[in-house]
Image (cartoon, rainbow, N blue to C red):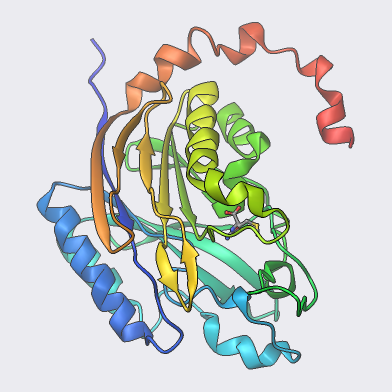
Length: 303
Ligand code: CDT
């Protein structure tokens, strides 16, 4: 008989981080979330996208070096070492989103996965960069991610960690079925995804009322169609006047939401993830080897 595999996972949603909030204060909030997750038996805690700063792509600066202070130069660093130390002391792993300015001068939107012993498992760079490249002065706020970040050249990875096959994606990645499918093909069992989603979608405000629906729609379908757990974690609430979606959730391989936040503040939700549940889908309806027709899907990568 196979030994059942369970992983206690926490989504540590964060309320807004304002422009003047310093990293020490943000990390103190994260440590408080870590403690709450630990008290609930979590082994892995997932924080949002850009979890150390405000969502700075909402402002444009002509000289990008003026934005350097929003980026980390290394991980861990002086500001985040207390989080690493406390997580290691508690024996909890975590996944943290932040902006990274590499030694080569390249700017990335990343998530780092840290093991229960404090060692870095992997750093994932965001693949799909939404928004715009140039200043758009007519907008109520900018979404200039394409100015501030390069698209990852690495693609999606799946790592053996926490006794599971763990993948990562960041915010807009969750809207694309290819993100889940590439990881699904690598056998992913648990996908970790931080996000910052403004309620107001400037190019088409008719979508505003649907933000919560679309958020659940993509993560539930991605989980189900690939037989994987998905953990989606928001930086929520009104940040510098911009209202952002909460509704962080943990989705089972069946597509069912097993836990969801109720607030737009710092809030922890947890789930005991049965990793073998994935195979009820991977070995039946979504038995990729048996049923997929990749020779019919060429257009997806050709165009
Ligand atoms: N951070 C991020 O990727 N946000 C986008 C907002 C929509 S595009 C302006 C998202 O997909 O949620």
